[in-house]
Length: 365
Ligand code: ADP
View 1 (cartoon, rainbow, N blue to C red):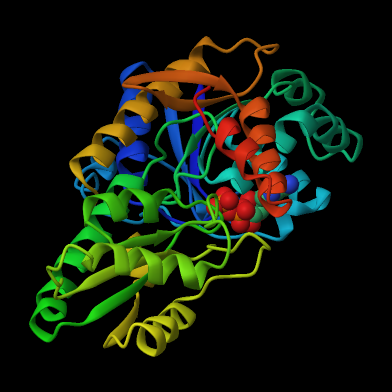
View 2 (cartoon, protein in one colour):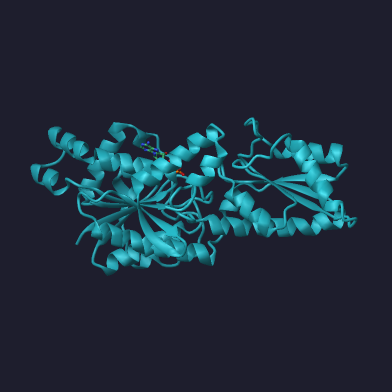
């Protein structure tokens, strides 16, 4: 008879709905009440209609949909203590002692802060006479489990985050579509691929679509990138067979060795000025985050959601918060703090351009 609250936060990703569905179904199956907390942390802070008890039927007909049906938001209020105090008061009002956060590293960092701060928030609510002594005792612990929903695959500790596979499908569909016109007109195409500081999408998509050159943030070419680009395309036509088209993928965070951004328009200029190519640029943008979830993401979301509920039920007050990860083909629990710290460290190393260390840290749990 425990209560679980589930929310999605930060950027949406395909497969989040599958995770929510599994959390509702597995939670109810084992006798818990499950609550949707709508609009991410904002809904937790605002309370009211944002917190609604889930029913079996309310989680039907959602597994295929992209995005997140319970809404997501960035929330400044939750970054402030007063916001988290209001959130704590709402959770206590609804009797929620278990939370499942589905989001990126920002959302999970927030969840970790919230859990660490929880005892002092409850004490303050009691001191301000906003909750009773009994409630203070009853709600002395908050259990938190995280799931990573992000198309970027930028979280340390898991091989894949929820949404990556579908985003790759969207990218490949777009490249396949572009190829027909590219080949017809003997045109080169330069595509900007999402991923913030993580080049996974560009690299994986590049392999799968036979890209001629891929620029990713983690592995800038040695020397001048313009020369590298031209040399590579020259090499490809050395055999004498001339290709009708080239695809160049540029991750949105791609940089050169000095940390200067490599942008699609600059790549276009090099190809047209130096290689005399007819070149077009396409920025795929939010198309990559759209559309129905792939089979893989539906299964990943379902498996991670189910495991999250079981992890909450296993947790004692002293158990550190965990994040549900994919290790090879296994679903595993990784300490949330460790995974978040490692992810933050990677961001620092990226800023310092220590790429070898980044690649080492990004490995498995
Ligand atoms: P993502 O989860 O996709 O990385 P953000 O970094 O924007 O997205 O984080 C989503 C939300 O999580 C923020 O709008 C904020 O409400 C909350 N959050 C992020 N970091 C913290 C933090 N250090 N403390 C409290 N809340 C945070």
